[in-house]
Length: 212
Image 1: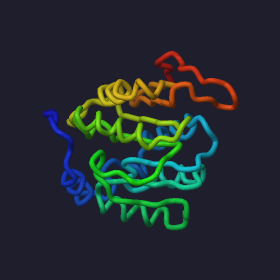
Image 2 (image 1 turned 60 degrees about the vertical axis):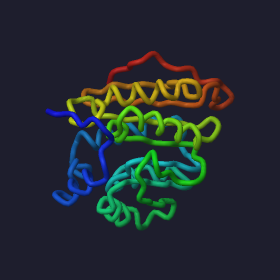
Image 3 (image 1 turned 45 degrees about the vertical axis):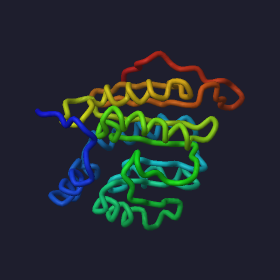
Image 4 (image 1 turned 90 degrees about the horizontal axis):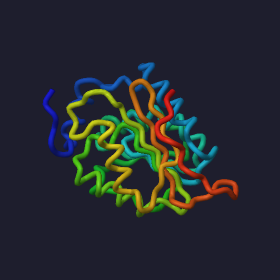
């Protein structure tokens, strides 16, 4: 399998959605269902004031996350995916969906949760560094960042492990690993601002990795 060497362009995703409205089987895959459940269970707080979901696709995880957010901004590069997400989330007033190609395009505002699920490995190393800077600049004090990535073989610029490890390295001065979980086919990393407190107690990183 030949790996891409640069960040995947919008046309890559437009072609995937033109060929199949759900090219990664977000609606029907047991892997996706279990991963979404694990993602929601790993969130350090029961509710967030402002969430940013990068790479929301057709909105399956968006709809599940929305009840835990006062506001939820979902970004995706593919308009066909956003059309489906808008239909799925039409009765969820907290959800705002926008077309954006990160890291070059970024929404205004700050967030106490930034979720990057199956998205960082679409970028090359330089764009991952720029993405990490964007995240650091828009994360509220004490905020949480959650990364989730497939760990199997891909043709993307980075593997899931490479993408997560690089993002963590690029953020290490301001974000600390709070929790890491490796399941059979994916890894989940929860980061938060260094020295952040939950319930008056300083949260300390757990030993990576805990297996599930």
